[in-house]
Picture 1 (cartoon, rainbow, N blue to C red):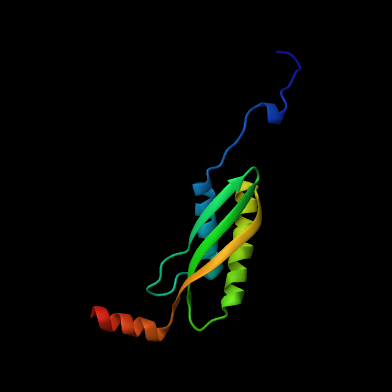
Picture 2: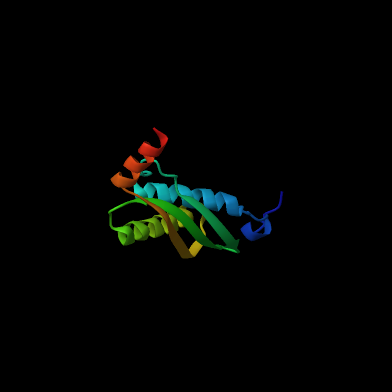
Length: 115
């Protein structure tokens, strides 16, 4: 064996599928929200990966009343942190879409329709 070494970039490439990054983003959103509202769906995400960058869209359901802006900000920060840490990608954009609000009143009304 000679002293020649192949540079890391010359040994191959690592490709991470969009769906893997989306799963990480959805999990990060759950962590930021500290759970799912009663009767709510967990956060879900879709991602577009280009080179070493991921654009993320996250759908969430939140409690009402609450500080929606603060919760969405926490989701953005946690998604950026987790994707950077676990995948090494930059996340220049995290769009958070609040798809539904859950209140005690809506839960009571839903129980009345199903019970």
